[in-house]
Image (cartoon, rainbow, N blue to C red; front, side, top):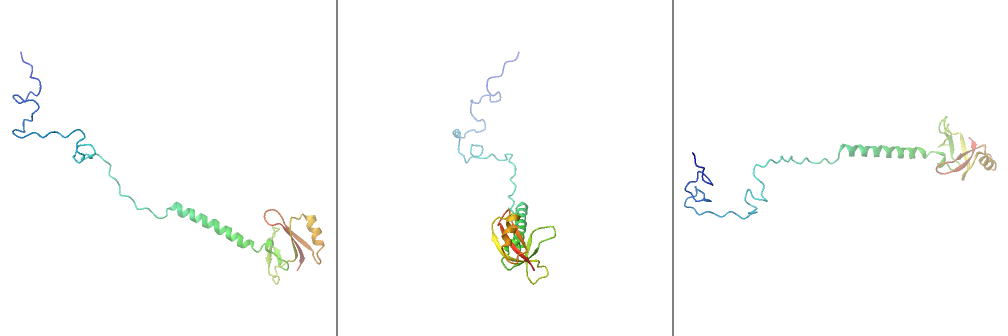
Length: 170
């Protein structure tokens, strides 16, 4: 029959319990208190050496303008160009006409009129009178009959400025 091993470390025979068998003749240093010194490795507040952290990629330099920003600026410029171009083109419309100006039809399919030079071969009619306000065909004809030499009229109604031009052929 065998005897059970003694309690504790079976290899520490003849050694007092709790002593380091390799530290013979050296005074034993007390362990640091729980929480320890944060500058010591293995203690709270100090990252462990060799911890599996993902490498941090270097920060990419930011572009000053992204493709999306350039695209949006190009769209805004295109819209502004169209609006300004339309405004410049419309400066010759009938709403800019004054008494003494000559007009021509803007196109064959449109009832719009454009201001032209009276010496131009395109000049069709001359403005004799300009009256602000809303006019129907009947009221426009009645108003322009009061003007000497008037042979026709042009009434602008709807959005924007409303007016009546009493015209004579050139």
